[in-house]
Every structure is written in C-alpha cells, then in structure tokens.
Image (cartoon, rainbow, N blue to C red; front, side):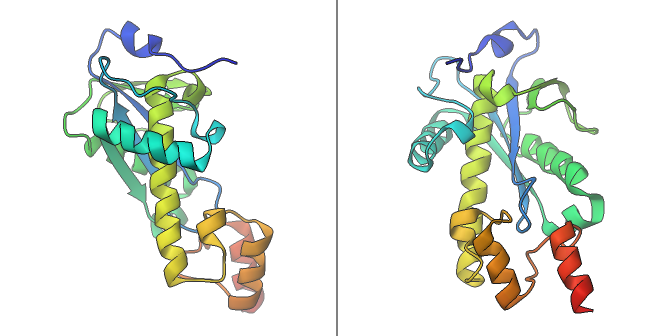
Length: 203
C-alpha cells in the first residue's frame, strides 16, 4: 500500500514548507476546520497517513505526537461564514487562518486538493489526494480531523440528541432522526439543502 513521504517537502526550493488540509466540508452541522503543519524533518512521527485511513485511537496518538514535534496552526470557519460565503470559500478562509496561526510563517504550502485558496500568504501548490502522498498534508489531515471531532463532541454535550459525538455532524440516520425530533440548532448549516428544506417546510 502506498504511504505518504517527504519528497514534496524536500524538493521544494522554499523552506519552511507547511502541509494544509481540512475536515468538515460535508457535515450538516458545525464549523469547517483546517490545519497547517510544518514537520521537523529530524523528528517526524511514525505512521502518518490520510486521517481517513486511521482509527480514531491512532489519530489521537498521532495528534499528540504531531503537536509535540511540529509547528501547528489551526483555523476555523463558523457555520455563519459557511452560510454566508458557501462551503468552498469558508474552507479557504479556514485554511488561510490555519497558516496565519503558525508560530513562524511558512514560505511554501502544500494543499490537499486541486485548488489553491486565494489570499494565501505564501506560494502554494495543490496536490490531489495529497493526504496520501505528502507527510505534511497527512499530519494536517490528522490535526484537522481530531480537532473538529473534539469540537463536535463538546457541541453534542450542549445539544444532545443528534449523535454529533459519534457522527461529527454528518447527515447519517441518527442525525436525521434528531432533526425530525428536536428541530434545527444554531449550529446547523442552513445553506445546506436538507436543513434549508426543513426550515422552509416549517415556514
């Protein structure tokens, strides 16, 4: 099985290089979260990979290892920003905020996907399926995923009944049943069709 490596970072003429990824573009509720990570080439945690290929327990262990060895920035875009600017532009906003949150500004960014956010504060390159190809992007995918999952667990305590502690706000059956039973919360994305439809029907 192919695993990410450090070749994109090593071959860049610009240093330091950060990897950027996001979590939470698809869910019906909660913010979108992005992370920017500059790995220490002398101390890269073992086992970094696309967060979707790792168990929750493994992600938690690697999250702590990344925080302990790398420079990490985290950026969020709120539900209000998602509804105002659309999910793609909100994701760009979160990514730019993650870069700005780094303790040292990077000179180059490797971004998971096929687009570079406008207004990025450094030169950047988009890498399709980058979380499975670049160690820095893989690290960013883990940090973004764990950060967002923990946020959704906290929100689930304030708004129980939707199963966010298990489904992270995705539109699964338990979430749908919670909506039918309890209605829409301030943390739901009203620009997303299923939520918009519910509100429209209610009106």
